[in-house]
Structure formats: C-alpha cells, structure tokens
Length: 257
Image 1 (cartoon, rainbow, N blue to C red):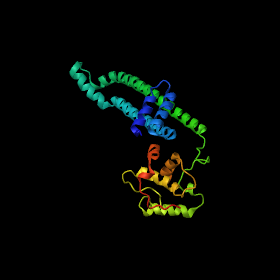
Image 2 (image 1 turned 60 degrees about the vertical axis):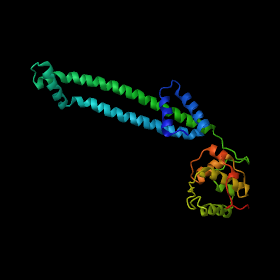
Image 3 (image 1 turned 180 degrees about the horizontal axis):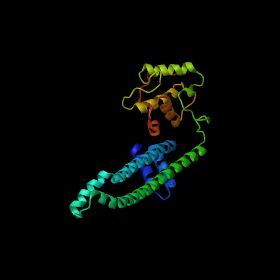
Image 4 (image 1 turned 90 degrees about the horizontal axis):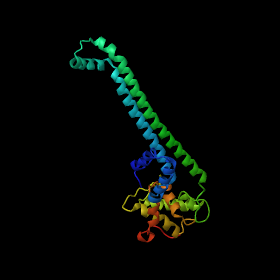
C-alpha cells in the first residue's frame, strides 16, 4: 500500500492535470487494483491531503507577504539610507531620503503583494477544484454502491458476531478461547498477538471456525477482511486474507462443534 506521502503526491499531480477529475478516477482504480486500497479510503485520504496542501500554501503565503511588508519599516529605510549615502554620496538627509523613496517603495511593495496574491489565489482555486471533484467522486461512489452480498446471497456481514445469529453463548465461548490463548483482548476484542504472520493466522482462524461448525455461513474473503478490521481492529489487506492457509497452522485449541 502506498504511504501517505505517496498518496499526497497523487493529489499534488492532479493540481496540474488538464482533466484532473479523470486523472483522480484513474489513479483511484490503479491504487485499488495494485494496493487493495478501497476507493472510499483513497477519496477520504485525498480530501485530507488537499486540505493540508491548501493550508500549507496559505501559511507560506502569509509569511512571504509579511516579509515584503516589513520593507516599509523605518528600520529598513535607515539601513538602506546608510548604504545609499555610501554609494551615491548625494548629501540627502534621512528625512529627505525617506520622503523621496517611501512612495516608490510603497508602489513596488504593492505590485509585489498583488502578484503574490494572484499566484496564491490561483493555487487555492485549483485546490478548491480538486476538493470539489473528490467530493463529486465520493458522491458518485455512494450512489452507485449496492450492498455487497455474502455467499448466502444476503447482505455482506461486517463483524464476527453476525456469523453466530443469536447464539450468544457460542460466540462468547469463541471469544473466551481466543482470549485465553492470548490472541485477543477479551474486553476490546483487539488482536494483541503480534507474532510473525499473525495477520494470516487471524484470517485462517476465521476460516477454521467455519470448518469446525461455529459460523452460520461460510464467510467470503471480503467478510473475513471485515471481521479482521471491524472485530479485531487489525490493519490487513485482502491479499493476506486470500493467501491465508488453514492447513499451515495449528488449531488444536479449537474443537469441532
């Protein structure tokens, strides 16, 4: 999966694409296929990134504008006056020099600030455009999205508990067994065992729970991913779920129902 910085680069590139919405849509699909990064996650992260980019640009703009304005400080004129006297030797007093130079400096500063504001506003307009396009893509995604189906044809299940119908005793027993073995926290259900290969082992455990008759239906790979993420609060990709091999693990702690 791409890092946050890499995802941020996608948004930064979009700022200079003639058809930025098409570019974002294409990148969104590429990232999903290559890194199993869901469209919704890509859009949410990209919205956060474009907001950070705009905020950073505004922060830099304010610093640059203040630096330009500081050239109107009298101290700056004093420093420039000393240099002027050495170079030009025109015999002007400071007040005469100040009276002559101030209007010219003010006009120059005004021109510089106007140019700076124009560049800044153009950049922020681009950021706002990308923000709008990301929100449009998010809305389109939500409108197209249909409830996923499990292998039973019913809506996709999101948590482990949904695979136990109303059999709370059986569910509580599975949770207790996993907690007693040190795999999860019995209260939070967070997967706490971080031994090498623990993500694959967690996915295999869910598969074995079905084989042993604990679950009321066979979970799809996507449903196993849901359980790992939503029940066990684990960061895991679909490819790890697909590769998880039940036969390569020891499940002696589980007994067939």
